Amino acid sequence: MKIAMVASEANPFAKTGGLGDVVYSLAKELTVLGQDVIIVLPFYSSIKDKLDTLPGEVTSYFVSMSWRKEKATIYRTYVDGITYYLIANDHYFGRRVMYGEYDDGERFAFFTLAATALFENIDFKPDIVHVHDWQAGMLPVLLKEKESQNEFLKDTKSILTIHNPAFQGLFPKTILGDFYGLPDSLYDSGKVRFNDQVSTLKSAIVYADKIITVSPTHAQELLTNDGGKGLDSILRLREWDFTGILNGVDYLEFNPETDDYIYIPYSVSDFKSGKDKNKAALLHSMHLKDTGKPLVGLVSRLTWQKGTDLIFAMAYELANKGCNLCILGSGEYQIEQQLEKLRATYPDTVGIYIGYNDDLAHKIYAASDLFLMPSLFEPCGIGQMIAQRYGSLPIVRRTGGLKDSVICFDGNNEDKANGFGFDDYDPAEAVKTADYAYETWFNLETRKKLMKNAMETDNSWRKSALKYLEVYHSLVPEDK
Ligand code: GLC
Image (cartoon, rainbow, N blue to C red):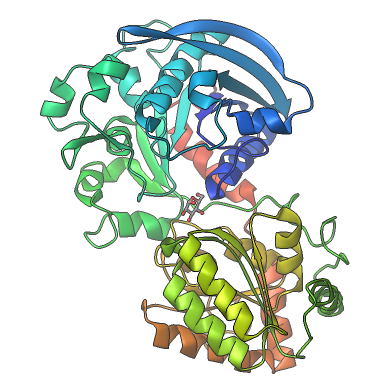
């Protein structure tokens, strides 16, 4: 089957969060399963900066955006069996940042139109075009409204994966005619309209052949008034075509037995001593005093979505009890400042690194005993699964993918529990659970069992990719 992933992020070139991991890992696993997969990405200047040599230029063409024409220059490169097509246009993508620009509506309209035109240009006739989040959300619309008579694309099916429903791609109505060359009637009939704007995410929900979100629980949440971020009613109309598939973790990248970033490799048979050594080395490198109590890790984008109130409630509780904390993250300035305050309160035992740092992230996963992830909402979440892989027990709020991936210890399920959790978004609940995890840690036998369960949890991409394939095959015949 020929599959084109059209996305704004994909490892190893462009990543601000889990989206970049998923697009790459899913494509890689589908490739291993014998599928012909390409990834189409904007050629941001941040990608150019990372490359030693420019990939090969394959073609270029003009994209009509209503009355203007903008040139798309296409570069091709290969990673892990996946072919990447990078769409360059310096005016739109020759910038340091990926999003949050005043003209995002226009930039991603160009990207979407250029991606639609790409397939014929490179003679890749996709059975499936798979878009992710809002950025190329209008592609399913273009396929049905503009390309349905086009011999080349008329049989192509589209899939949308919703990674984060809080980003809805809201733009003025004028983008329809001005950029996409689509009629206002789509707006007037409500098909692409959302809160009196065009929403490229909602448009994709209306037009894609199948819709997926990144965990079964989040799929349920999105269908409710409370959890739907306003999209519930429209998703309910598509309920039969909508499902949740839990993301996986890249088991090559995250493997304590072979990880070059961590101090000492370890496996499920020697994790106690392996983790102890990693802990000692990490604390030493961060100039922290080992308190002999649990090491608590946090690796996160710092944004309200991640449950900041609960993070701080738990962090202070645990630091107060004498735990070591190692925290890595970047994001909202205010949260960074609050973290600084925490560090200043416990300068000998709490270490903070503000920024993005793969190396340190791996070290924290390997060294920590407990891992904080009490998100306000979490479509899937990857940190908790990586933590499990390294035998660090996640403390989560049971929402979205956190609920689907963590079996919470309740005192009686030592044979299968692989973390701790609570339900309500309530600091008191969070602190109670943190205390429970802290107490449990001192019972060495239980601790070891839970950590072993965590390390043996199967969060591999294979499982998820097979489910995606099933969805593709519900649209495309098996022999493809
Ligand atoms: C978004 C979601 C996160 C999910 C990721 C990848 O970042 O917030 O929960 O894991 O996308 O799907």
